[in-house]
Image 1 (tube, rainbow, N blue to C red):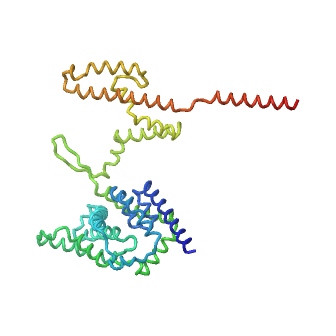
Image 2 (cartoon, one colour; image 1 turned 135 degrees about the horizontal axis):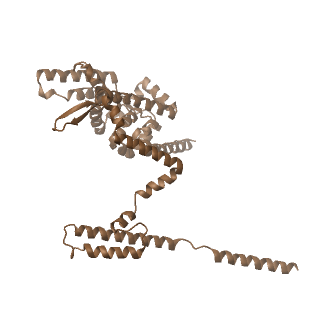
Image 3 (tube, one colour; image 1 turned 30 degrees about the vertical axis):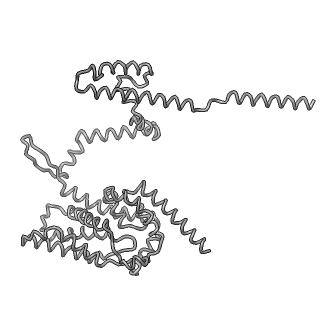
Length: 394
C-alpha cells in the first residue's frame, strides 16, 4: 500500500509537470503556469512584465520540475533548508532590485502631474512601489516576508534619500530607497510552515479551483492596468518638432481624437475589417494556408523573381534565364561593383529551384502506385474459386 501510494503520488506529480509545461508554453508570458503551481505573486510579476521581459519565461523551463515538486509537496522545509534558513538566491536579489524600480514606476506614474505634489508626498507611492516589487519577488513557495515592515523601511530609505539631497550628500543618493527595505525584508523572512495564517491561506489556495485563481490573477493585473491607464491619460506626452528644429510636447489625452482620425489608424482599421470579412467568407484554415504560402518558406517565389520569371515557369525556362543572367553579370565580364553579389544571388536562386525540383521528383517517386493490377488479380482469383465451387456443386 505504501508503494502504491508513493507511485500514485509520483504519477500525480508527473501529470502536474506536464500540465505546467503546457501552460508555460502557451500562456507563460501571462504567468498562468505559476497560478497553477500556487505561486500567485510570481504569476503577477510575469503578467505585468511579460514573463520578466522574456528572461524569466526561459528560466522557468529549467525550474519547472522544482516548482512542480514544491507545489505537490508539503510546506515543511527540508533539514538542509532549516539549517540554511529562509535565504534567497542571487537571481531573487537582482530581481528584487529590478522590480522595485519597475513597480515604483507604476505607482509614481499614476499620480497626475497637475497636482504638483511635493517630493515628500510622492514618497508614499514611491515607497509603495518598491515594497510591492520586493514582496512579489521574494514571497513565493515556502518563504514569506512582512509587507508592512518592508513598506515602512522603504519610507525610511526614501526619507534618507530626500535628506541627503537637501544636505547635498552625494554618497546617499538613490540606493537607500531600495537597499534598506530589501535588507529589512531579508532579515525578517520566515517559513510558511511556521506561520499559521500563511499555512491556512496556502491550504485554502490548494482547494480553490484553477478558474477562480486565474480570475483573481487577472483582476490583480487589471489594477496595474488601471495604474498604467492613469499614467497614459494624465502624464503621457508626445514630443513634436517644428520646422526650425525646436521641440515641443503635447499631452496625449488632448490629441487622441486626432490620432484616431489619422490616415495610418484609419487604414489599419480598414485592413482589419477586410481581413475579418475574408475570414468569414473563406474560413480560418484557408486564411492560414494563404498566410503560410505568403511567407515563401522555401524561397521559391523569391528565386523566380531574381531570375525574372513568373511563378510556375518550366525547368527549361529556368535554365535559359539563369544562363542569360549569368553571362550578363559574371564577374569576369561585368565591370560594375555589384556584379559579384548579383551573380551570387542569381546562382543561389537557380540552385534553390533545382533542389526544390529534385525534392518534388523524389517525393513523387516515393508515393505508392495505385493497386489496379493487384486488385484485378485478386478479383480473378475470387472468380476462379467461385467457378471451382460451382463445378463441385454440379
